[in-house]
Amino acid sequence: MNASARRVWGLVYRHLTLYRRSWPRLVEIAYWPTLQLLIWGFTAAFFAHAHGSPAALGGGALIAGVLLWEITLRGQLGVTITFLEDIWSRNLGHVFVSPLRPAELVVSLLAVSLFRTLIGLLPAIIIAYLLYSFNILVLGPVLFFFFVNLTVMGWWVALGIVSLLFRYGAGAESLAWTIAFGITPVACVFYPLQALPVWLQPIALALPPEHIFAGMRAALFHHQLAWGELAAAAILNLLWMLLAVAVFAGQFRAARVRGALISIGE
Amino acid sequence: MDAIDVRNLTKRYTQTLAVDDISFSVKPGAVIGLLGGNGAGKTTTISMLLGLLVPTSGSIFVLGRDMAKDRFAALARMNFSSPYIALPQKLTVAENLRVYGHLYGVPDMRRRIAELAEQFDLAGLLNRLAGELSAGQKTRVALAKSLINKPDLLLLDEPTASLDPDTGDFVRTALETYRRETGAGILLASHNMAEVERLCDHVLMMKQGKIVDRGTPDDLIARYGREDLEQVFLDIARNNVRERVS
Image 1 (cartoon, helix red, strand yellow):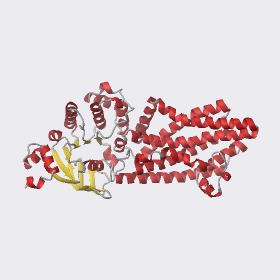
Image 2 (image 1 turned 90 degrees about the vertical axis):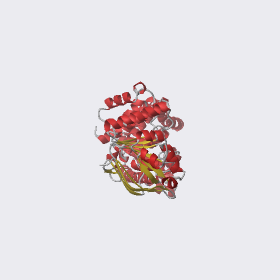
Image 3 (image 1 turned 135 degrees about the horizontal axis):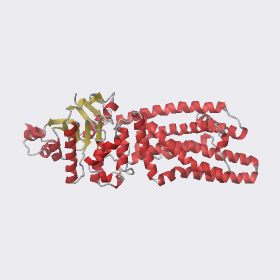
Image 4 (image 1 turned 120 degrees about the vertical axis):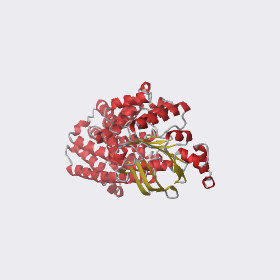
């Protein structure tokens, strides 16, 4: 393992060890996706029972939407809570005076986030299959594309939140739980773009999830790959990620100028 | 090559001049005490030496590396300990040392942790959670962490604050041993004057962001006509400097 990979592994090991020892933390990771799935799964089952086959198809889209959107939410929370864990434990001072580069810090946060996302979604995926006979794999290989793009979106939102933590300290930590949820109305997870008011549609179009979920509905309802939507999602993700990295780098530098790395827990 | 070479270092916040045009150097193997009252600029100076804080002006070279351009190369060869920064409480002592062993790229980490466990009497604590330790045990673990990479330069911010005399003496002895065995430089910020007299070859007295006096502990005590460094500290803190020196 080269020096950079070892430093990344050092921080990943720190957090994996924490989860290995703390079952409440593991439960917390899976709790919300499972709860969301149960609520929307029973809702979908009710409509399918009452209105028959078309509603069942819509119910499948509902469940797929819940599971896929949770990828973004878990990805974002995975990064921000991992960063907050070091703030809460007053450990960041030691981390920042080690040879760990800011880019390595980011990579370690993303790696822990990926672990949290997979662990968090697994129970919900299994429950969707057992309770509602919905197999997420029915989406086919394009599911991998959805997963990557939704995860990346969670990550750039998270980097924006970590930047706010550098700027405003732990006082901004409540944003870790709220910002991605706030995007949900314009993510078009459960409805097409046309369901939004006209003035909100440009905002939705500027974000990757509208395109991803349009692609999901095309795959589920018409068994088609909407390449245009998928390409738009990937390009938008790339642009937003570049912006988030630039903001992160700028705020990290600004925090070093202001002395905020020393007092970030306040 | 000096372990630390600071030239005309200044840190200005919007309304505060925290460090005001200070210059000093630390020779390899020397132990330098950074003294001053609360708000004198000690922590700000150490933060700039560690790259946590960007200076407003001036230069810092640590172990021959310019901290403005090449701080990570220097950080790999230095380390830091402060009672005000914790180690993760839910990790065991061994896990904490492993984390920092990875971050500092320590070769043969198992052996290094065993050495530190012996040196700091941690063998019985390696599998205990850091959060379950007493203050004295935590200090020993923090010190072990700060030596995990066998640093050539060690920065310590009040390493014996709120420790009982026995643990404090243990820490001071460990630092003396480390310095003797490795020839590492140490910069020590402390309010414990007896500790500074015992450990430090040279003392920098800070007040309101400036270095207002410097010298060996004996030299300062003689120049101020006092019996110990604590009285010198009080003279400086209470503005008796000019009267005493003149």
